Amino acid sequence: MSRGDIARGAGMGEASAQVPASGSSERMRSGVKILGVLGGMGPAATVAFLARVQALTPAQGDEDHVRVVMDMNPQTPNRHTQPEAAGRTLGEMALRLKAAGAEVLAMPCNTAHAHAAAIRAAGVPFVDMVLETAKAAKANGATRIGVLATPGGEALYAAALAAESVEMVRLSDADRARFMAVVAGVKAGDVGPEQRAAMRDLAAALVVAGAEGVIGGCTEVPLLLDAEDVTVPLTDSAEVLARVCVGMCL
Image (cartoon, rainbow, N blue to C red):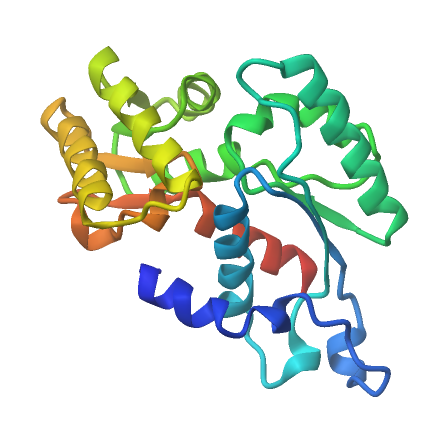
């Protein structure tokens, strides 16, 4: 799904969080689950994820879409510098979403999946974006996969890809620092041409290092990078998560 597709989906974003009308067809109500989203990490990536959920839902009208309850919490403590506080906050968010009726939980932030246990403690099925993305990337046939992710995200993907018997290709230290600067720019609202060129260069560096596929392992990546920008298959973790959520909820 391209940035243009995301933008078109965002234009109908209210449908993804639409509360089903009381007159909805029995066909669509039977077995439908409410999706709870732990969001805000960052806000733009969360909005893009919701647009994907909307766009990937096979709907004839509003009542056919996934019902969503969300805690958009940009004040979640920093996942890199305050991990314990972040874990507590994410666990509290999961409990609030459960109380609001969520039957499936998802979080469009790869790095924060380090706290998956705190979220699962709420007792609601939680879609693990990292594990699902690793499986999807392997399905493309690659045996060496590069990952565009934060240091914390890299660690999670290293384990997930190893479990799939796939070798992970990492950014160099200098490129990782550049990647983090680009992500910070996105969080500050900069998705301009220079940012997009930088993300293309980073993906290309992974290919030069031997990657046969690339994972967008940070949900800011697809805000700058499309599949046609990469010479090998690109697996977008946010799109993988959205597809799994739609499949579980409908």
